[in-house]
Length: 124
Image (tube, rainbow, N blue to C red; front, side, top):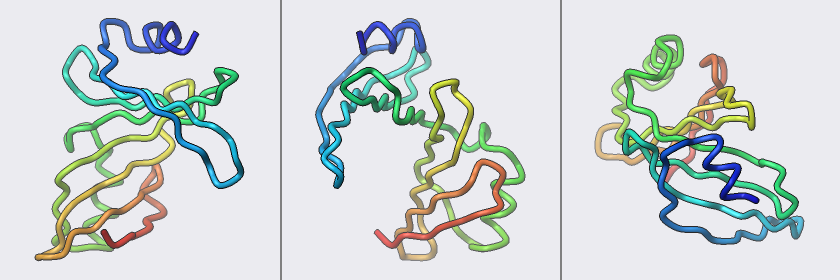
């Protein structure tokens, strides 16, 4: 059922691995990792009943909206992303972006809303 949904969402994708994560509330999340036709990574997270929790897709910087990149530059001048993924809803609407990167010699992980209006920083 889950693999069928992934193939429907991402035709010609390859599933690489899968695992189960237990959330703090006890929910089981099935995390399926793979690669898209263009070799970008994805993670498809779903509950046991098949309901999609989140879909994460690797994004090159040129795919990130300019407003998001400008908001990061304004809040974190000099931040250089090394990895970006977009978190999507089941309908593939971008909900947020997750960035890993460097600020000088410090590694940072940041979460940015889809429109760039909210940026949360988490030290790595």
